[in-house]
Length: 113
Length: 112
Image 1 (cartoon, each protein chain N blue to C red):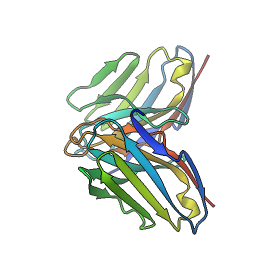
Image 2: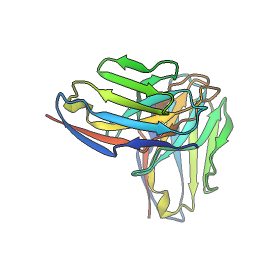
Image 3: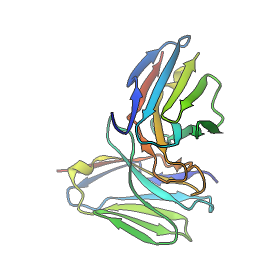
């Protein structure tokens, strides 16, 4: 019930492509879903997040799509660039008190020039 | 210094050694976290401190001992570790009730 399943494990796209990373959760009590981006040698950094009262959220080239009934959410990167090459983690949490994230296993994205 | 800093960045220790990892946050937050990051595994939440009180301990072995002397500093004391404890240990902070966690760069630990 506490797992967040993330796929694919790795992804290679050409510059300008639209990589899509998918996550699924089990615990219906989760109500906050962030995506973190991690570059080598750095800690993860918040990229974008969504709550289940909306089905989509866009910030720049990054879009989260959320399907509450299927308990799934995904990250789309529009017009991907080589600088987007990083590891992406989805997470889920309850938005009460101290947020305790359950993270997915991560997706290593490589964008070819 | 800005954000969340961690020292040392790399640590190699034997199974009988005792060492400590240090984390400092310069963001005025009141909650701090230790995570373990292993290859091909999700980030594992180890400990959570809120207002310097430990509020979460996710069944972490007693060979890991956290300490939070004030809201800006967090330590992870290590003793008699096992080779499977080799990983990247990440510290994070947040404002209690706030959603964004800010991570440090991590300490890469190798246990021989």
